[in-house]
Length: 66
Image (cartoon, rainbow, N blue to C red; front, top):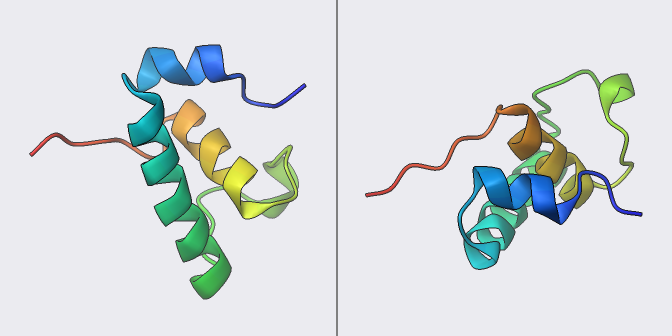
C-alpha cells in the first residue's frame, strides 16, 4: 500500500493532475539540491517522489492558485 494514500491527498489537493505536477517539481528539487523539509529519518518513503507526497500531506507544501 502506498503512503500517503491518494484519498487523503485528494482532500488537500483538488485535482490528481495538480498533485502530480506539484510532487514532480518538489521531487526534482529534492534530488538536485538535497533540501528536505523534514529530517530524513522522519520520512516513510525512500524515494523523492514519495517524500514529496508526504510533505504535501503534512502541510509543508501548499498550492496557490494564481
